[in-house]
Image (cartoon, rainbow, N blue to C red; front, side):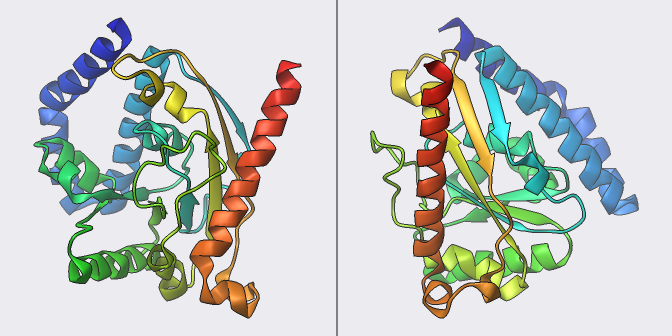
Length: 251
């Protein structure tokens, strides 16, 4: 319980004592948006890495060379833990926003920091608003800011991490409308940090693989028609490969 308390205290202290910094970043956004975006990314990355250090999380990452530093892309990953975002954001090299559920946007101060790193909020109960979020995400990528999505739509609680929830094709429309490349991302072990022994936080070994960029227009017609299924199967295979690598390392 000490670790979860330390995580919560750190987050609360950052949100409260970081108010002057938040105000400064709001002013900087009007004067130099690019500099503000870069600064906010580095600030949040520092906070996230600090939180992961508190939890004792050990991360092994493969394929980080596939993370572009000169183009906006759509990151597509599996989702098993609230800590997925902390781990994912620690690796991005350019401005990257996440599509988050609308409820998170109701938290004071947190919402503003999320907006500062270009996160978008999705109301899953409103189809019209959901379409708008997809279009906003595509426009964001066209403006040079990457977007990270979890096509499963919610956290997957299946005991077998390779058994993913169905990927929603709608999220992949972000890539088709913006003509950007897609980076598939597989994560293994993130639920060992918190979800498997709620409410405690425990040290865990997490493995991440960033796949090679995929251009939707270069996929076979049947895959372009059902891109959600294509990336669901691709990331499932990537998770299976990570399991084999972890198993070999432990033998």
